[in-house]
Amino acid sequence: MNPLLIRPTLLGLAGASIIAVRWFQLRRNVPTWTLAPAVLCVVYVFFRAWIFGRLSAGSSHTFDLYTLYADLSFGFNPSLWCNRWVERFGLYPMVSVVYESLVLAIAATYALSLGRRGQPARVLAVMVLAGIAGAQAYRLLPACGPVYLLGSECFLGEEPASCATVVAADVRPVPLDLSFPRNAMPSLHVGWALLVYWVCCDLCRASRWRWLALLYLVVTALATLAGGEHYLVDLVAAFPFSLAIWALCCPFVWSPQRVLTIVGSFLGFLLWVGIIRFFPGLLWSSVILPWLLSALLVGGAIYAFGRISKLSAV
Image (cartoon, rainbow, N blue to C red; front, side):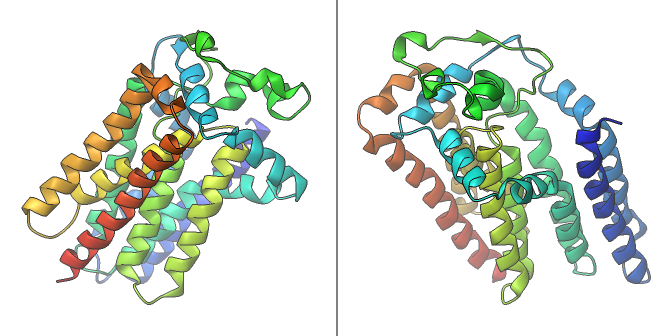
């Protein structure tokens, strides 16, 4: 096995073990099917490259120059800045472990839901639907990530910073190695970490677990940028995307507010993707605009989640 895959494989198997142990403890009170996610963890660990390769297979050309150009409209290069900051304080080993522990975090969250009426099915639906929908969303704007576009030499500072400069005339689809994953937008790592946090907020409203989940979300976001796997615009897209998935899987009855949340979040996600793909220069009209749109998408998703949580608690 590739040495680079050993640690995430072990973390994923640890997640499957947590589910199995928790299920065994509650086996008299939970149905047999609730053990199935442990098997899914094992399947994901060993076949994730094949699964996502099939689901998100795209053309040889990607839109990485579009996403990098959009990122630079924030006034700096977010991925390079995070990488330099993490390396400066020696945090990269920690954030890389967090990035690789996604399956473990999802599995632990699912295990937490076992024994709670209706919750295991909802948590499973949220996580699986996010993966399926996210893999299909990659086709809307195929991109790999800054480290794949720029190369490790540029990304790690071994070449001049000018290698990461993109101007409007450079923005075009570029051919990248087909072995590179087309998994940039939305960032499913951040999307799943956000859903883990929301599930913990729902299950453990007054527990320390939700604060641990929030820390995990923050460090995951940092890791996705610092490792060069995602652009900042990918992380922004994860918020409306995850909100739509969450609202679809909520346990309370259908209502105008729920429908509005689902439609609005999907439209917000599509609008963000559309601007980057067809009108990336719009973000350069003012340095305030990308920050404002990002705040609206991220803040709107957080606010809407709070509203939905109040309804589901009734």
